[in-house]
Length: 235
Image (cartoon, rainbow, N blue to C red; front, top):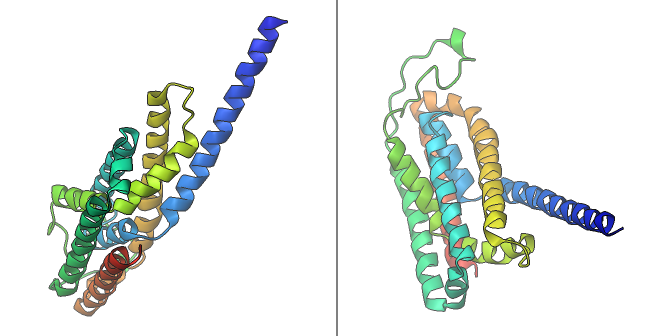
């Protein structure tokens, strides 16, 4: 009977872990679909440099998520959350950076679009270069995506409250954090690249005129500033 009891316990533990991971997966999708600075940054990149190259900004955002998870796993998140001075410094720095990005977007000079052939309206954005294609390097997009997500202390506090729900202290911690981190990153890449970047693709027609570029720069610049202001004033 003992082997049977042991097998039943292992099967039950496995079912619990699978159920816990399924809950984590669902939560990650809900969180990633929530509009924020990362989504705005992804859509702006997709509009400016094309769908494929927008991945570099998304990878930068994922690097920031990994840093946040490492901070929480190392216990430093408790110090940040418990230190009003550190929290406020990071919060205002993040808000200022988003406002800076918004102002830069508002002041961006529209590029004269190349003549487009109406018979090729359905070509992908990678087949026809964007008006601003090549204006920003991959490293620059990666770095901007990193800072957009990294300078958000509320993300650290969120992960501090979020991650422990899916970690069982009696089990080895490293494999659990690896699974949680991989799930968070993969889901966010899927949502950012597969939804927000694709959604921005439908607006690419506006980048073919100076007026359209001004409108998009105004919209995304205003959104960046709005998110920055909210980060600064909402406690």
